[in-house]
Length: 163
Image (cartoon, rainbow, N blue to C red; front, side):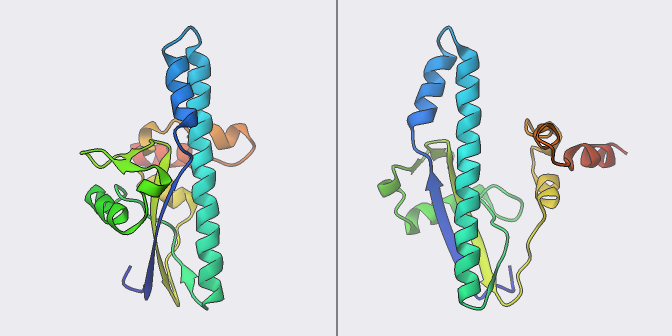
């Protein structure tokens, strides 16, 4: 992000509650409930990430700046090793978060994000973010937006990738 004059780092988690329940039910007589709870946890951390992004954009605007779309360690251009920087600079332990030796966050329903702030900053559409994701071809959410009435870019992208 060469246009950035400022950088914002963020960490967020929904905690261990849903993860623990999900694991419990996955190992019990009701694994469907475990899968449902896992999906709810994923949706919750996505909502948390969106809310943190909204706050960053609002604060940037108050400073007369624009915020880029958030990037997370492990995305193209930001290696998973940068996760160490987030955990060194931010109060992860106060949030109940830690890193595994392979730099995965615990609780798993957590997010680390980076934004660039500047007079002009790139932002990416949801479609562009999906197409850059390493899970693009196998995304379990690819049909969700169609189900709830939004146009999904995944099917179009899959067709383009296979051509």
